[in-house]
Length: 120
Image 1 (spheres, one colour):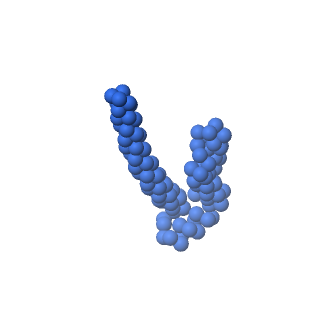
Image 2 (cartoon, rainbow, N blue to C red):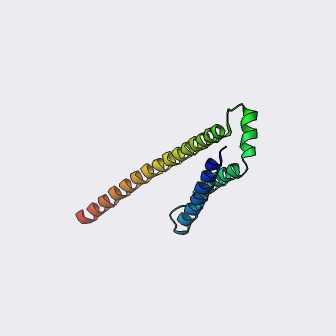
Image 3 (cartoon, one colour):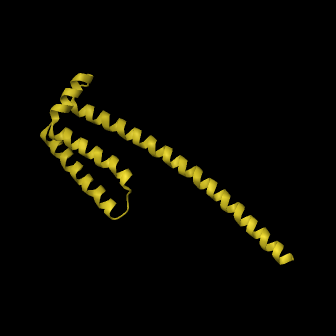
């Protein structure tokens, strides 16, 4: 792994950790969601600081270079995270639909009650 790439990975990881922490402090990001990004950034930073880990893993897995392994692992992790977020969004969408239906039913019942009171 080239020195330029290692420095770039360290700097970007450090900046992303600082950014995530700032978003948490401003209450723009929940801690449970931010943990994923902090862990990923720390892992990238560790691989950049200790490239021997990535080189050894790449050799064991039969990947041509450590950089390719890092990209492959990152793509896989982001795909898993994307799938997880898709499941959460789907669940929230169902809850919103249920709440919308419940509100509509309650409004209809309130409207019918008011009409009955007006008619009496």
